[in-house]
Picture 1 (cartoon, rainbow, N blue to C red):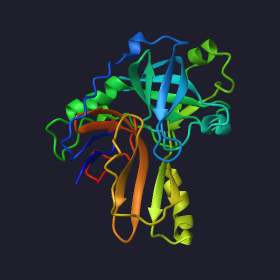
Picture 2: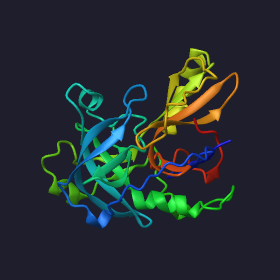
Picture 3: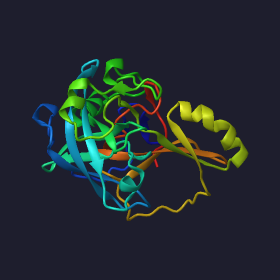
Picture 4: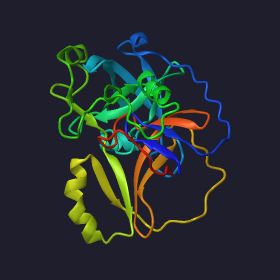
Length: 272
């Protein structure tokens, strides 16, 4: 069983296949408003696509020594980001690069934004999770490692960032919350899913009716930054899987999501 941490999310793969991931990183103190970059994610199927990113500012020490990078996202005309004008559920963990250097993972959004505005968890904070988890089994990691932001409370955008970006429509009064996680439910009657939906939404989960599963696996698929991945909560006649995006891979260890999936400490679940 693969190991999953329900937090800034470090994961452990059972595969021992080497995957050299020596991407240089850019720290928060090197970022400046107006810098441009690209992100990677999957909007459909398994093909990784790029989207554009513009840095709006950095929210310093917004929660227990944690910083948050604020950015505006944009995609191809007619693409998913352009059509919705919102950060899309399942993008949690999408890696963002500036000047070819990894800065972090798309992790927070504002549902009522008129443009796709995102909060990006700095990569150094995610790598701290990976380092602190080295050698850990099922014990809890320090609570301050995982800033507690629920799908109800959110993070208000500071006034200074709003004033510094008058070109961004609707930034005034924005409150960032963890990006919703698609939850694929297979084997459930649609009436059951309908009854479960209000409770799941409160946890930041969007239930989706799933189809059947196959035991066949593709040997050609490689987990890499921008790839979709699933966290299987239930497996059997009924299957429940949360979907996110892989941010960074180092050998057989990865980090993903960029925020808590649930408000737990360490936990073990299969990764798909």
